[in-house]
Image: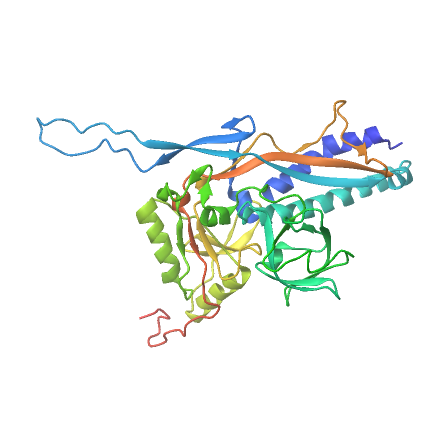
Length: 400
């Protein structure tokens, strides 16, 4: 007979490892390439020493001249608070009792809940990975109260049906997303308190309760004024390469960024992230110049095209017209522990929700993403959506 105890045992002993692996490896192609570590955790913080420049104790001289003065490598301390990441499932008492005498039905019930948890968690982990840590999903630029929708600017892929969003300026207002019109960048909700006062133009919407509480994603390296407790103004070496110039996509444009980062920051780019539209544009470019399209398989089973062996990955959470150039060896996901079920004092993970005939269990992980060499990363944020006409003056297919 299935009981709460047997349900808990299944969640702990069977499903936890499967879910943790899915969230650590299969959530996002980039996340799968980033190493994980439990080192450098002090209390609620990550404290990591990061080198600045090179060792200065080098020089040349006469065979009897004084040796070069010693100058050890400079280090600074990166400090960042671990972020609290949660995933929650809910099972009704009625559903649990209905499957109590049928093990297969109970397994199907748990499988369904786990699949929903993984789907939701993968979406939010992927979104946070390319965010800036502020939790911003989208920015409002128009409100229509009659039909309960608002138009937005930004990456519409950050929002999905079922999400509970919030105006952080008025945290008492929570809104359930009922439909996302991606073509027209409209988000619909059914809440009766949907008014122009609830959503002013320019307001940046967040996931409920998440403002400034998400991991420091890739965009945070480029847009934040301070990083890991250090001011970018006072520590200019923290600033990565970033260009807003209009760029027409080509091998040369890609190689220019890679060469710059190699020469200036001694960084070896091994991962290029862009939108799926820009990736298709690059495939079009390769076809226009009659180039072979090489494909590689990444850790986690993801497949993608490459540029000179470097994976070019299309990710829906990358902002429009943007391409990131990353050295994944510079990134570490520091975590207090792997994904765990939240337990009470008695070790229970399934608990009744107060005043409701339902039970819930919560996955938790305390982690933060750290880039040890921000200056070794690059970004193009104004890539043209069309190609220049190919030069067909000779039969090589190459630009003259």
